Image 1: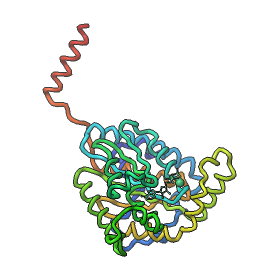
Image 2: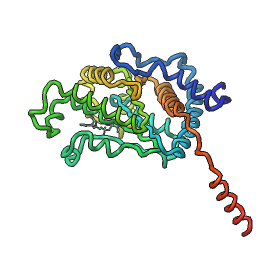
Image 3: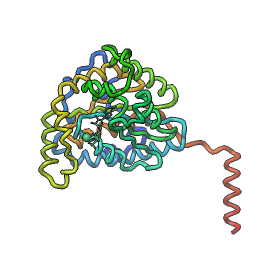
Image 4: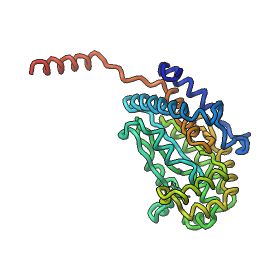
Length: 305
Ligand code: ATP
Ligand code: MG
């Protein structure tokens, strides 16, 4: 396979090409309906085994790049994952990150905010979870929920304890502005930002919910709340589209990932991360003469034992 035998720089180039169709850096013309959740690019359903093999090679490549990121210790990667229920966020994290050293990776899952969290501005809890330099931070849901679930359900906004005089119809545009500024700030401080929307069709979601009901080992994943959220499908799609239109940027692109086929969506996510880290052209730190002398002395001491 071409990918397997290639140098790191070639593999990075292949990934860059693979993920480019899904990368949105300027949202002004973006329409969600232009992206087909069932898209599998040049691959067909019978290519699934090949795709799995490619993913494991991608996982190895990502691990290589993560080691460099960790050793370099100046950049950090922030991966934002957003999706409707059952789109495969958890599986994506599990598979794409399976080769990465757990010490260099931090996963934060954001749920309904706690009382303590609601006592602060809404960004507070997310800022605390930003990855340190040298690390990959995964936000499983993120500050973007503040323009998704909070927008779709008016009562959630009402519980957020924001002074009522500050809440009006421009609140969503203000939040987009906040995110644009926040991400610009982060990118100027060494954060590489990759935002993913796993774009699932309503039909495929139903199929996955049915599988959760039909398969005993999947019953635990089923939640009645998820079925209720399904009633707000169109509101969510609208909120996602507006959010992507308003917050896609070169330094903080959205990847709109066709998610009806897990084997394909994982390839897109892995390739986007490889391309983003690859673009940093990270090298292992150089050893200077003083360090070389130190190593030679250590070797001599060990040999003398
Ligand atoms: P899974 O279902 O695969 O375990 P999940 O991310 O859906 O993963 P849940 O515990 O089911 O996790 O859901 C988390 C819930 O928290 C979601 O319904 C989401 O909308 C909600 N949530 C996340 N952020 C906020 C927020 N800022 N305000 C209100 N609700 C939020
Ligand atoms: Mg859920």
